[in-house]
Image (cartoon, rainbow, N blue to C red; front, side, top):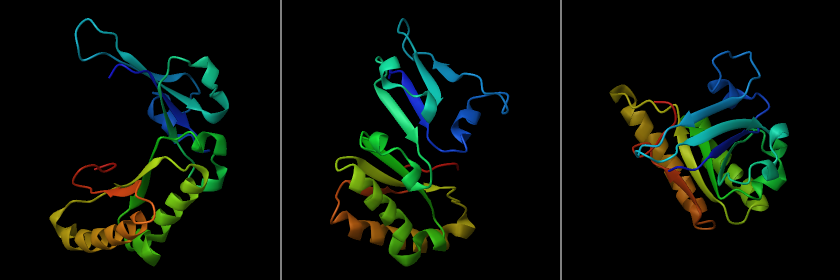
Length: 171
């Protein structure tokens, strides 16, 4: 849409930065120019920064900042979490991810909500296997996870699960 974007890699493993580099061992600038889809308009830049490189004042023209957070929730900078408008929280569709009433997902929602009272949060299925042989298993697990998140949603309507038919990560 023509906006420059910062992808802020808060995960100590710094895997997001590696996706943008040809030499995985390099610590070079990790950015990508995206040309406009309309003739005569400027494109946009996607720049990956690590947490220690981020300085909001150095990027006044940037309107979209996407944070790749650490899976250890307490390690994410609270000052940034407070600024989130949206959170996409990946989960796996397996018995462990659904166990204990969807505890992993709802605990993550609660943790973020304690810091940020306004962000909209979305659960998104990671590594979804849509093969026919997985259909019955997927339906059972997705039904259970949906039930738990819908129940949680009564107390926090800004949280929802995105059905894998609409969006999923990796597959």
